[in-house]
Image (cartoon, rainbow, N blue to C red; front, side, top):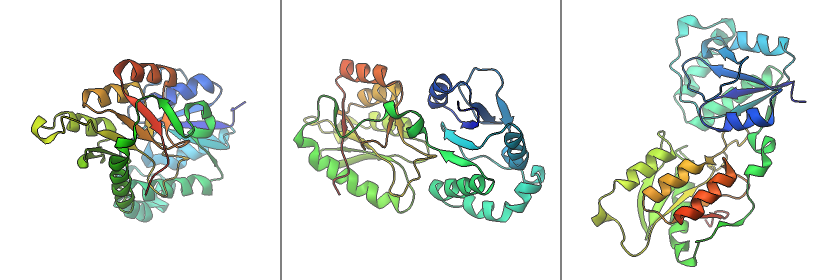
Length: 271
């Protein structure tokens, strides 16, 4: 089972979890991109030579691919492009100037054109998703105005392909996720001067997929470290979208949230 599946692995714990669940799958890592995989038999690929990767995968009988883990945008050396990459160079250069959703959509299209099916991490690890409702206690109705503001802001930023998360506290926006990611956002919030924070009501982190985001290749995740960072930032908890955010190391994450008094609530967007 899964011998026809290749997992294109980036950084973080998601590829590690997939390795535990799908040891028969083929794992591909990319030169210059960090990863946490320790297993033998990894295929090392270069972005400049995707054509060679396609040939290798087809020779191995790969019919499906799964994108997992975080990857920064590579700095491509066009002089090293193989013939396939040369054939898409103009379109790729245009997409590199646009947002992540457009770039990922272009990459998905390339793999589909090569005959590969796309598998989502959510379908591979359904136990890491949660339905609507309480995951860890602490949510209260007085957070609803902040949630409304956060959802309104995320709806606006989705149109320009910026971020999946925002922090709102007593009506004030303390930070918006950008290219640096959620951990950087929470670190920034934690360093906010006390005179700018509300002493009576803690803020909340809201993390959701962007409108139109392709969850097959870019699904939001939170893990135990996210919970630590939420607590360190002086926030009350996190609101996530039901069935659309992966809880990495779910049991440990929930236990840590309970220990730190950080709520986790799964709610659909209000606006």
